Length: 401
Image 1: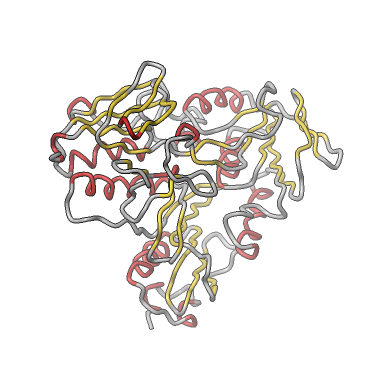
Image 2: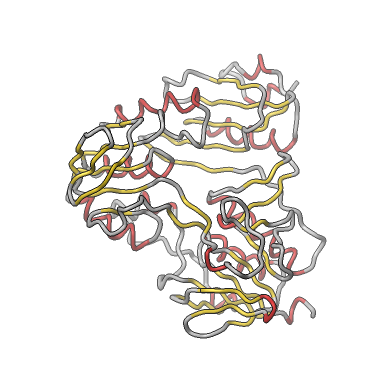
């Protein structure tokens, strides 16, 4: 069937889903495009939820997209409950939805703290409704306990301190960002909490939560007008059970290099999927905004049927926490050399990871130029001189061997 006559249905109205719809039209697709969103809200961007929306500086973060002008049918508040590939149909409470081509863009959902879901005062921070429930909590300057010292935990703690709350962050590991960065890189970041007036308790596990108090396994009781849980996210793919779509160890859709699933006419993009990276020689699952922005262009190109497009990006993300702008590009697993640029006790520094002399990842704190140059060097695969690279006074790009 010619691409212009096909009916494309996109499940998920977050960044990945919206950008897929936009990219299809940009690539000249003239067939029907339907975007299904489980939430009733106009599609919105998530990063502002932990910043401007949470602090009451913005009422929302809706995408500036004219869906009507694009010819995209937007169906909100319609949750998909199943997929029947043999019939080319989706199941919803309102009835089946037929498709010729399906794009799975359902993102990820936060991991719940066992036993805490029904306790009053326990919150997650993933949706616009979550942010709106938390906004008055911050405004009233409660004692806040944050469970998890990952990226989202640090960003929420930053906002809570800015709002004047007393903040304690509880982390089961020995350091913040334990699952994201090596120990020697994350260790200096632990001091950021105290500098901002927040308490960081590591090696601390939550035993149970009662209204107004968090009980740790060492007997400590923490007062908590609110508890925010940020212990990770998992792909939102439970609705694919029984569909025949192959899932990975984390229940993500196993997409190929063109972001196709194991089932014909079904693509997967964004937080709900992983893809094989030729650049890094392994499968990557990237839960960050830039992945949801870039992947849809590959999906759209392949649906339209242009020259096959392969998805192999340099992963990128950023985080604003405790007055610092943190950026990361690449993938440091497998690196054989680590080079520091600057003093991590200072306001601006960066770290570079090399493998066989080539840059594979860079972390920049308050050094956007290092990040920008490093990202290009990763893409080029150029070999670098570690001694030149270690001089923070030199532009990173001047270290090319």
